[in-house]
Amino acid sequence: MDSINKTGLSDLRGAAGAPRFGFSPLSLTVVVITLGVMTPLLFLLWLAVSSGVSHWEHLLKYVLPDAILNTLILLLGVGVLVMLIGAGCAWLVTAFDFPGKRLFSWALLLPLAMPTYIVAFAWLDLLHPIGPVQEVIRSLLGYSNPREFRLPDLRSMTGAILLLGLVLYPYVYLTMRAMFMSQPAHLLEAARTLGLSSTGSFFRVALPMARPALVVGTSLALLETLNDIGASEFLGVNTLTVTVYTTWVTRSDLAAAAQIACSMLTVIILLLALEYYGRKNQRYNSGRQ
Image (cartoon, rainbow, N blue to C red; front, side):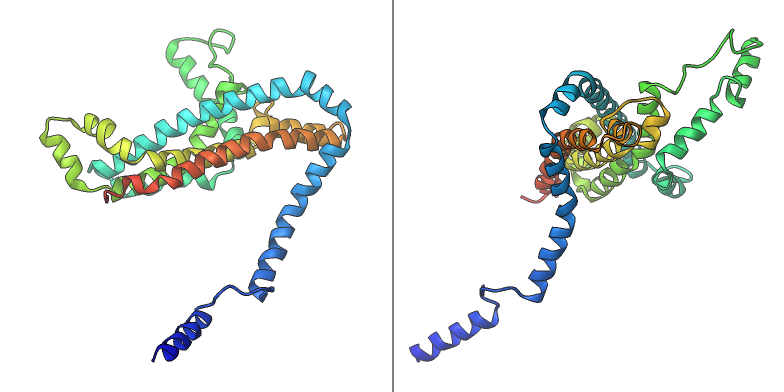
């Protein structure tokens, strides 16, 4: 009986797919796809390293400080804005009932369908000093020409933060709305029973429980911000991505562009680590111990 059991167990282990040496078609496919994805990155790293130190000295002294500072300011501003808009709208459509709620909940996703540079072009044309919006404002205030009154120019860091935030907040809205809908209702009811208002319940119960979703959504929005080139260049913000493009296309210096792109990897790795941290703690809001 013991020999039969041992034989049966060994057969079961073999049938269950015990690890074997060699390549299966599936593993070979994965290796080929991985090499295909990694080849451009490896070539970029090789190009950046093999181009010499002189490029790095010039970039570190004249190019990277301004580009890195602009990129960090843009990421910080967009991050704050998408968290405020995304989390606020998600809580509004989840915790409250009002006319048009269903339409409103879906309409908040529409900015994802619009390219950022198209949105930037449209808003800049709409808010032009001689555009319709400023003409109406001047007529209401009693001014006759743009020299007497004009709104701040959108071609600035502030304009870029505002426009990118208005386009990318749905990343936070989607993740936060899903988390708010999955939170146990009895926790919010208990908070209100203890005397917390709707605002207090949001900040002290709902928001801390949804913090992993907030981190994930914000990380995705920041990756899109770092990836953007059309809107940033159009609005006059010299980010790392814009610097890579101008160095390659305008100056025809592929080696310097590769080195700037490699410096972006640090920012990307930090954002991916932030997103991984959010996913790692996703179970925090499940309500199960």
